[in-house]
Image (cartoon, rainbow, N blue to C red; front, side, top):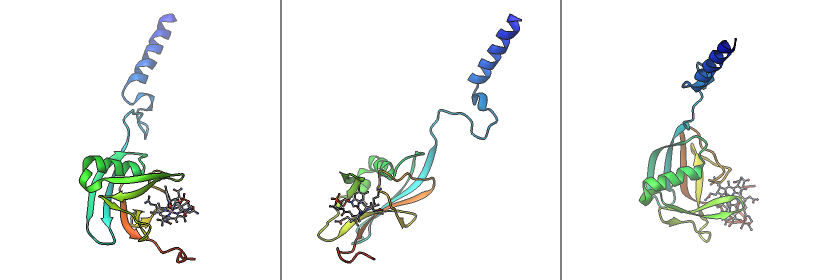
Length: 148
Ligand code: B12
């Protein structure tokens, strides 16, 4: 009786320790490896057309737009370097590749995903697999000229 119990417990332990553990055969195998996703990241001077640089990146799932920018900067600091200022909303991108926003000229760095402007800042926006991310030097309307 005791021997059977010990054998059963040992069997359960082995099953638990085996690759995939008790999830073997499940759709989502249990793994401690972090899932990775691929994104395409572009920095473009949309005003003076002085540069337009892109890079394919593999980043951990759950990464923010800001994380992607930081990884690109680490890989190629010349093309993807950027600066930011912290506000209550989070990180506000102030320059890319040495080109600074200028409130007197109403220029800023706009964030886009698949060509659509984001409604969240770089630090809050979680990127998805195969997403096309862009930071574009753009112009915003002068105060009093915002669309209704
Ligand atoms: C005006 C404005 C802008 C102007 C600011 C320049 C200027 N001189 O006016 C411009 C057009 C440049 C802008 C840009 C963006 N904005 Co804006 N903006 C606003 C708005 C309408 C008013 C801010 C303001 O003047 N507050 C009053 C002053 C006295 O307070 P302040 O703290 O000093 O304001 C500064 C900061 O708010 C900063 N700022 C402006 N936008 C953003 C966005 C983020 C993420 C951060 C961290 C800071 C920041 O610039 C302001 C002026 O210096 C707010 C909405 C609101 N009602 O608050 C949205 C708002 C803050 N913006 C927003 C967004 C998403 C953006 C963009 C990311 C849009 C994009 N797709 O690119 C970009 C920022 C990109 C970047 N470079 O990081 C969101 C933030 C939401 C969030 N949870 O993250 C808001 C809340 C609008 C919304 N969607 O509801 N914005």
